[in-house]
Image (tube, rainbow, N blue to C red; front, side, top):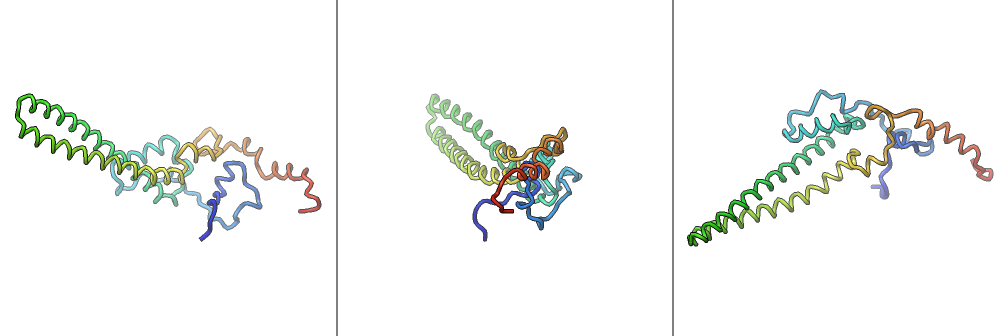
Length: 197
């Protein structure tokens, strides 16, 4: 197993303008089918995941994702869906906890202490569930961020890609010509390597 930094795919190097013949893996698989060319989200995804799938593709996010990345993209959408479900459940719990607190005060004011004790136990169970969900959300965020970064869906991972075309995923060849092989050759031709080639 190799150690160190993961190699940057050639396509990303081209978008960044850093592709050089000596740094390109000539045997790297070439993939062309974009995920935006697919008819839609797979049926087996949850409704929330399908919703996020559609959102990403409609807002430029899938323009550079290939169909061979399908499994990772599905994972990303489902992880987002899980976070949404956990956050919605926490929101419902907070409403229930607030209602329980009010009920406890009413029962105390009415001196119905046995009922108040039962309600306090119920409220504490709700708080335990809320804490469990809070921890679950924290644990889910890291793998979600990891997959999002792999796909280029985070600001930092996106900033490493130069895509200046007018359409999503379309690269402005005029801009990239400043960093193309010819421009690099021109720069290197003026460098004296002391007889080294």
